[in-house]
Image (cartoon, rainbow, N blue to C red):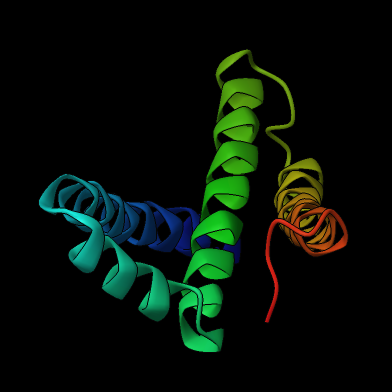
Length: 112
């Protein structure tokens, strides 16, 4: 049940992320002053938390999509294996998000 709820919630979060990306592109097209304002907000700790949440949603939604593909192929349909796949989807999302953000900070692409 948690896997299904998280899949739906991550889909909603990705819709919100699409709005954030739209604002980003609009500010980019509007000029340097608008873009600087957007960068100031989205590079703040709160903005980085939004980006981290969106990346977690994307990684989870990807893993849940693969889980559904496995089910569509007729595998993993027993309650035990379905629960295991849901657990691994969550674990993948957490590990992939942590690795992605660690790489961003270590490479210097993001700083607090």
